[in-house]
Amino acid sequence: MTTTNTPPMATPRIAAGALFFDDENRVLLVKPTYKAGWDIPGGYVEPGESPHAALVREIKEEIGLTKESTNILAVDWAPTDREGDKILFVFDGGMLTKEEISQIHFKDGEIAECQFVSATDLGRYLPPRLIRRVSTSIQAKQKGVPVYAENGRTL
Image (cartoon, rainbow, N blue to C red; front, side, top):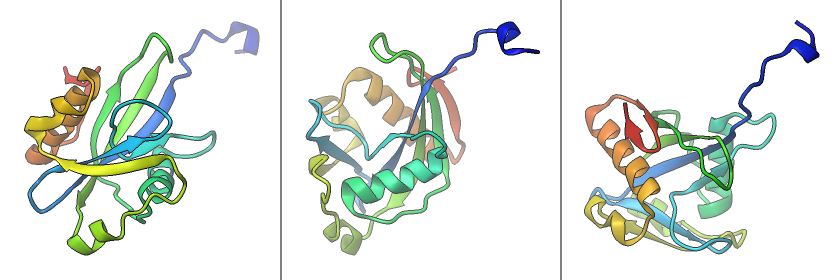
């Protein structure tokens, strides 16, 4: 098949993030400096980079930790009007020790602060689309089974 005969294909933006927990089972949220609101640690995958490699890079850049999590919690297809098609990978960052939490720092200025938040308080910090994705990912962690979601909802 030549280029002129190639059918249209999606070219989604891809992002990877992680859920980190403390010893009270609260989720780590970060407050970016470049946009309003809170998020989970992570970011966009760069050209030629795998979602896992992007995750490791973003975690190091945003919170100064080196974490190698490969356990996937959710893959979420979540297009937006502004950015088009998006596929978001949510990895399990695991429980951070008190020592790891004390080592969190924001070396590149992308993050202003971080906070551990209970699952029941996510609505105070996150927009509905991200509440769904994080909640679905927490449920996947509890069940020990990764999930596929669309707009944060499992099918």
